[in-house]
Length: 169
Image (spheres, one colour):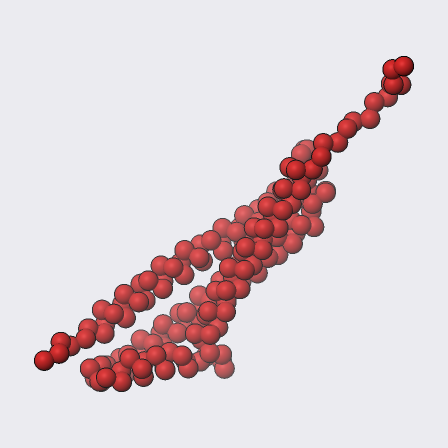
């Protein structure tokens, strides 16, 4: 005699794993978004060197990084929206089909339903995954741009101040 499969335990574990991973990446996107925006506005309103000089020389890069950070945040919001709708839809499907959970086709029917779940004409699982990828890419782009801007200042050759005296003979 085969032992009954505890689908609830399997599904709960799967959702907890996905939620934990997505939550960590979501937090990273929020930190990048907030950090790039704070750096941009902090440098823009700085009135003392070297931050004010940094903004004058690299302001466009900081703005670009802040835009990528904001895009990462928006992608993350859309991902969370799609994930919430998908989780709600999956829960409704499980409640409606719980009586057939010991059927051998139950997992494939569940997976097929999740794969084809839609809202507003959009496939939720696909949307969730694409927004996750775009959020990560935008976060990485923002971090790379800020790092590049800082590196160009840090590794730039030192400027020699002009002297007013005539060279010695």
